[in-house]
Image 1 (tube, helix red, strand yellow):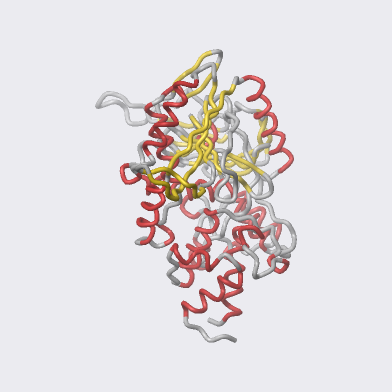
Image 2 (cartoon, rainbow over the protein chains, first blue to last red; image 1 turned 30 degrees about the vertical axis):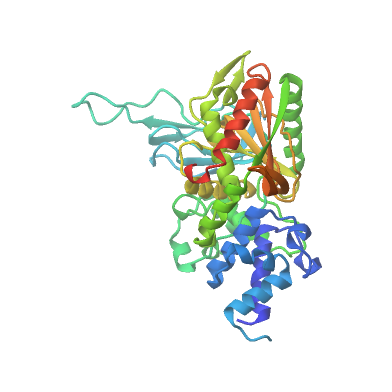
Length: 85
Length: 387
């Protein structure tokens, strides 16, 4: 799975949480909680979905690394040990 | 709310039902409500057709209840005199919801799934292939809302999406009416209490470290459990004020205030919150939040809350005072956790502190009882493993 696929998957899951937001307009380096107004329950559901779909283990301590779109993609890519395309 | 439109039957004459089964979906000013049946028996006749608007209180179906007779009684029960499943009046406000995350579709399995008549009609009219739709009804039945959701997904992503049954303006009017009534009729008093939740946070971190995300707890779970246990011990904050007098409730059903994307708000019940384990509470809360945001609240969840808890989360404020949802008599507000200098054993150190508030009905209780109630919540949060 390359970075593009990961980004697409992350956007899909964020879209499930915030369906009315056009993610193309969101700065990928901005804090998602502010950018798309998600709460801790939404974030937990997001982490759960990533774990469920990709088998990626995300301990609570690592949550801060996934609060931006870029951060989430980079974290998942590193965990999956994928090649960057 | 005076009327609703029946949009979906999930049962047909001849079906056996048990208590708690969802039998129909009704759309109201407050959104789509799943109607539960409170008797066991067999559906005899559906009295209201799909897409029919009916006033509140209209009987929707007739069921043949199973009467308990002495041993040796005739097996076939006589028809029940009571038309079951009336359209109840929920006193609480509701909110608009966002569509849920659709479960993965197994096309082969979906082809064998039951499809409700309303869903089938909509699918045919809009040329939706039912084998691509996943069912969220009983036993995976594809219901109207599932087909509607499929239609929503086919729309371009920049369009705003809303769940079926969602009407933000109607929702806001309903909230306005309830809150205005509350302020008009209920003499509120307000108390605040700062609680050191460092032990609670540490317990959460330890517990979650060993669990996959699906099993992790949020701070809301111990908070709601503590409020529920305290409400059980202080009945003046758990019940209903009706016809000029207070009726304490026998059970504790905590209404959980849930913000819904687009500006809506609902506070459906977590039933028996004082009796269930924290893990069960967390699981039910996740399910409740998901269903509320998807517009699938059950009728009992609207009418049953005996006390409400409200919180704005980690991006909220330090202190919030709720407005009581009539006919309840209290609402507990939980602020965000902040790090404060605190005195422990004579020394100053950083602690995680949260301000918990009580807004209560002064016709029923006074500040002395309110203070003891808040102190009890604080005390319970010092021992999260015992919750």
